[in-house]
Length: 139
Image 1: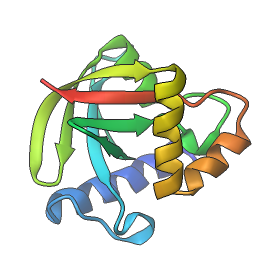
Image 2 (image 1 turned 60 degrees about the vertical axis):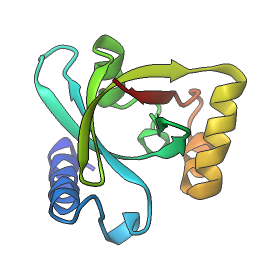
Image 3 (image 1 turned 45 degrees about the horizontal axis):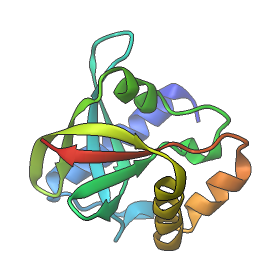
Image 4 (image 1 turned 135 degrees about the vertical axis):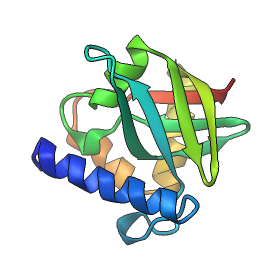
């Protein structure tokens, strides 16, 4: 998928999410989806990405899978550079802080998303990198 078509794809999902109180159809129907707004690591511009998440207590956990690509997604580099982010979950929007999760906790959370959305298991098999797991905590 080219960068332009990926942006168009994301734009349609973002529009549908905001028009339907956080619910979307198609491949994401019935899934848990949030909108993550990061600040560009190089550009400083605001970037919005629709992402699947796993609830974990008060935290929202996201996964830098990039569908099993050999590199991390751009949004991951943005939140490493600027861990203060904005989340939209359902009809609610709020500020959050992003922290990478490692070790056994990372593995537990990744197993949780694979159980809920088996495609994440395929992503892990397709890549040699360890897919980063990020916890987002409301400020």
